Length: 97
Image 1 (tube, rainbow, N blue to C red):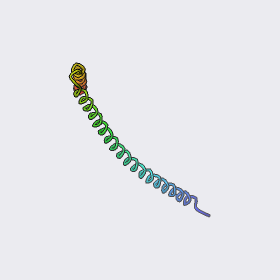
Image 2: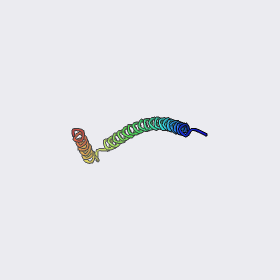
Image 3: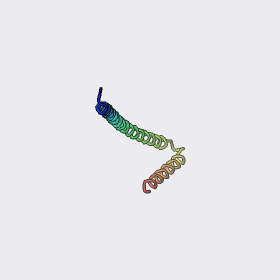
Image 4: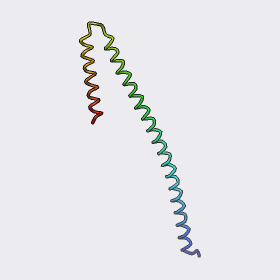
């Protein structure tokens, strides 16, 4: 006849071992997910910076295209420059908030 207390202790020990194993697995998975989040965050920052640079280059290209127009487009160029100045003023106002 097996002692019931001994059975309970063995069963409890097995459950504790299983919980410890689950904890370790969860901890490993959590670390992997943290690393993945860190990598994705880094990639996102790079993509955002790249996008900003491309947008800036596009803006410069648009300005250059407007400014290289002939003498017949002087009024249109002045209008475009005024629009750009207003846009810059809006940006400055947003930064000052």
